[in-house]
Length: 267
Ligand code: NAP
Ligand code: MN
Image 1 (cartoon, rainbow, N blue to C red):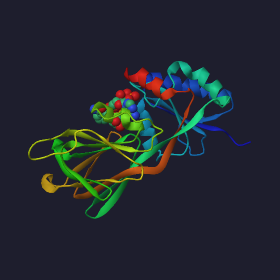
Image 2 (cartoon, helix red, strand yellow):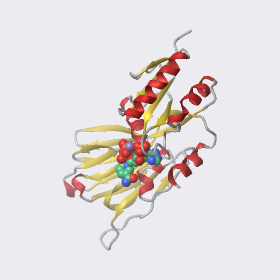
Image 3 (tube, protein in one colour):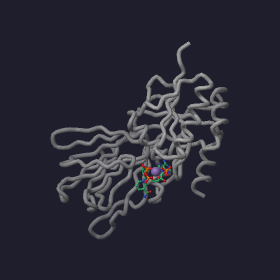
């Protein structure tokens, strides 16, 4: 029989290291081969940390097909179902295959600039802003339909899984992750006689493309904040965002985890 590999990726703090050692000992004793270096041959990746650690390991390992599960040692841990007291229960339930697998759609962003194009993937959201905390001015299109001229801090385009992150802080809607859609939420939109744009979020179907065309007044320097990672692009002509066919996977142990998790973490 081939080896059953499990990746264990831990944040660099005392508590996370303690859980890492505990998991290594207990999983090795059950015949698994645990590794701290990500292997694409693994059947599972355990992330020990908060949501930030989860997001980073997904990005660093290029959105792998290996499913994730998380032990929360961070602040919130919305993605991290298990707590530090769950190690033994996790090992037993995992061996008995008492879990379900879920998938999470990513969003993909194509940035077009003079001389090239870049493609970026996000788990939570892509935020479009202007450099140096200027207000950003851009035209917004939904597919080929012109919607509005936006002027303000920026626009957040979020996945259902990301709807409880940055999107939630600016009063966007919480979207159940079973829905396939993307949400666009304004950040401090300026509404005056000079500028008028939607002040609430809009939600569009999965095959729709949200397109931004920046106006020139801040020398074309656009910031894309991808799951909290900032990138600056110069001379941007357009930014197109849609729900991707690419997915990541997670295993879940509890039934009805979504609403319980939401209540637990927010109310
Ligand atoms: P961070 O500054 O530690 O994240 C801010 C908070 O968002 C953390 O408490 C984090 O949980 C939580 N979070 C992340 N994804 C979430 C989700 N899907 N649902 C609910 N809460 C979530 O930075 P980070 O840990 O590297 O996370 C990056 C994320 O920060 C970005 O994707 C963006 O959504 C968020 N962000 C939020 C704001 C805001 O709300 N004003 C501003 C910028 C960025 P943990 O404590 O478990 O890490
Ligand atoms: Mn964090």
